[in-house]
Amino acid sequence: MQVQVNTDRQIQGGESLARWVEQETLTRLARFREYLTRIEVFLSDENAGKAGASDKRCRMEARPAGRPPVTVTATADKVADAFNATVDKLVRALETDIGRGKNHKGSDTIRTADGE
Image (cartoon, rainbow, N blue to C red):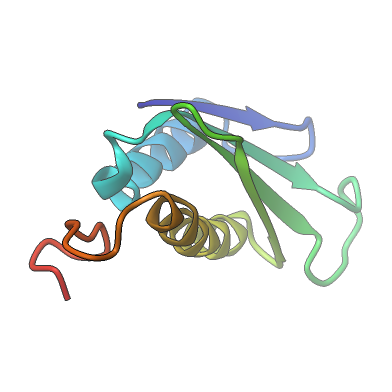
């Protein structure tokens, strides 16, 4: 699974932010690794540097193999908060999307390692 991080000019952090986002994404989406080919993360400041509530935006697009992309978005006051909210949404969306394609009568679940 490949992770691509994109930021606009208003987001500070550079290479260290990109590494953190990539590592967190790989860790939190590890159970979907066999289903996903690529994850794209887009971080932006909607107010272009001006002060404002919930102006940091994170959009993630997951590319499941052989399926349409799954896209989720969240906004928050801080980049990290927007990213964490987006990952949580993406996990739920992937559970739903990938779960739809499985036979629920007798198939293994992707929700937890012990099947709960």
